[in-house]
Amino acid sequence: MLIILCLLAGAGFSLGVCLGADAFLSLSWLYLLPLGFLGGTVLAVILAAAFLIIACAVVDMKVLPDKDSKFYRKMTYLYIDAVKTVLGLKIETEGLEKTPTDTRFLLVCNHISDLDPVVLLYTFHKSTMAFISKRENDQKPIVGQIQRKILCQPINRENDREALKTILRCIQLIKEDQVSIGVFPEGYTSLDGKLRHFRNGVFKIAQKANVPVAVCTVQGTQQSMKSLFKLKGGYVKLKLLEVIPAEEVKTMSTADLGEHVYEMMAKDLGPENVYDSGENS
Image 1 (cartoon, rainbow, N blue to C red):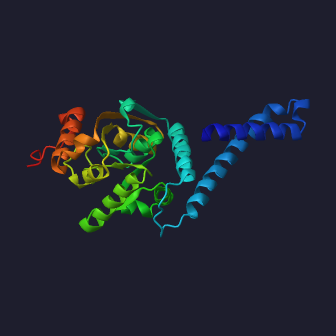
Image 2 (image 1 turned 90 degrees about the vertical axis):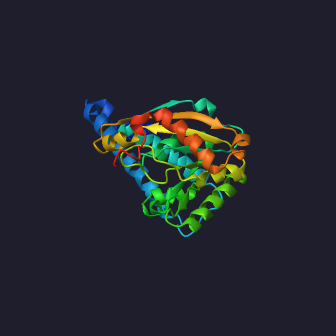
Image 3 (image 1 turned 180 degrees about the vertical axis):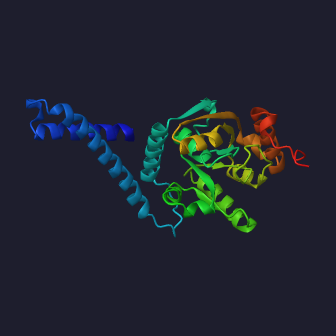
């Protein structure tokens, strides 16, 4: 949508230049029209970038908002879609028809790239997702401000007490019907792309909030990140494997639930994408 708006702005600017210069009364429109379109489009892109920077600059990073910002969320989807289009990122999805529509939920997925939450946020935009994010992301320009306004929750992965506060905050947000929560139960990005064992504490969110667990796998984001840096586009495959009902979630311990989800992901990803603890011994 943003790309279309920029192109329309370029076309309008080009037409205005030609009309203002009476170019259509001669052959001068042959060069004024394309030059005006190019200049107008570039100007529109610059203004769009400036708007994003200004919108993020006014965010108070000392405050944790209590409510999801519809403005910043729509802005986020708009800019993600624009970047996806410009860079030629293709996302193939499977199983999205299983996505809960009548309740909030906990979304869990493997984690192989910084692109993962962007893909999930874009794909599940109708579900109003907020992610648990490493606190270091708060320091990233634009990313940190946007995360704050759409209720993504920073977590201190090295401090169990602080991590528990984040989990309790996520439970509260779900109960208040603010957002659904997305987590990467491995805790860290897998550098080699292989599935690691989970930190099962995140499953307490679903149990305490009494919501289902949506189990996803993502493949291709690691390679896509490298391709995007080279402006070559990329291909990502995202699957929603299963939604575990809230009633079933409550009957399981976090350890059993984590093991069940892990096995589900491992089966879908295949043994070549699952870490074997003995392979480095």
